[in-house]
Length: 484
Image 1: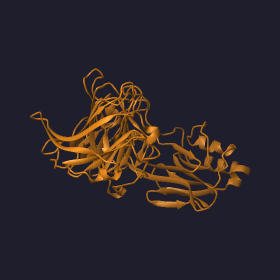
Image 2: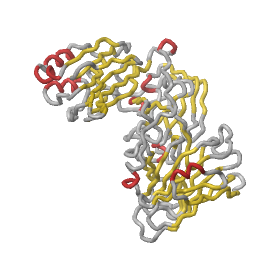
Image 3: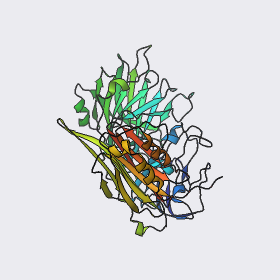
């Protein structure tokens, strides 16, 4: 099933004998290759059954390489669909998004490495950003909660068109900034797509010093091609006032020291279930600008952040995983969460580390490393083991012998606590379990490894001086892909 554009609705379907091979991607659900267009956040699936389809082959979001090219086209970067009953992901009501799309992710999203995806929750919609004069620029859009994770879009239309259109999927009720690789366009129109009544986002658009701005709102009827002006945005000297806009009169805040024009875009009309726009037409905000000649590229990221950065907030709680007893397949996902971090209260600094397996938490009581061993055949926890720093430094053979003695097909989860001894022969254990031998360890370590003659895609190591975190699902039983 190729998911493209949308909204697409699939119900009561069975997939048989889709199996990825080593070096050859195959999946029941996929996306249009080399897609310059879009994905609708209302794409959804229900009551899906898999027959002789490994759980690792249910979905694939793509990766750079043969068939997929560089995954640099706009539609490749913004893929999404809604798993209404959890029959695909085992998480009812979850959205599946591309693993590196930080416009849609939040701190509780769960990575699915085999699918190159993340399981998330949220309220999602789209904006179309149409630009004129010029129409050949690239757009960078940044969510305020993840300022170091911009999404760069090149536009859905050819660079020789008289206008360009960018079509990102966004998380509602969040703040974003928009930047350009050239001087800002003279005309920007923001279309509210798949917004329900009262849905909103805050947007800051980058403009050069000395720009003159005019901002209006209108409704465009795509059937009759008629456009009706609905309101005017007035300039305010208080940024907070943009939140007090209404349909006939809105407010924009022009922050000249950063170059950002802030406004709130909000839907004022109802929308039918499968329509992109409201019952009255497409609600839009249009910004016309007189740009000083010779202006440099309008990229305000360095000025915008960290000044306008926000702490990530989970607005919609993650759904609970369907219990294994209710699944209609011998395969299932095993949810694991590993964290190693510092906390500081005034002058007191404390270290914490834990490993969580399907909701069961194992706190690390002492400095060094904690190992949780899981049977890769059934996903059951086999053992919990600790090795102090003094052992890692003085008798590293202890941890080496322990790991060497584990049965093949063992999943090994590791966290660190305290000031980790990051050198020495004990680190060879991580390589045995699939870690890159060139990785540089730091005090905080989280590692998902696997003891076998092969290393699955989900083997993962995070190392940091302050916090290391991994939250992902693993396929059980663990099966080696057949060779092409």
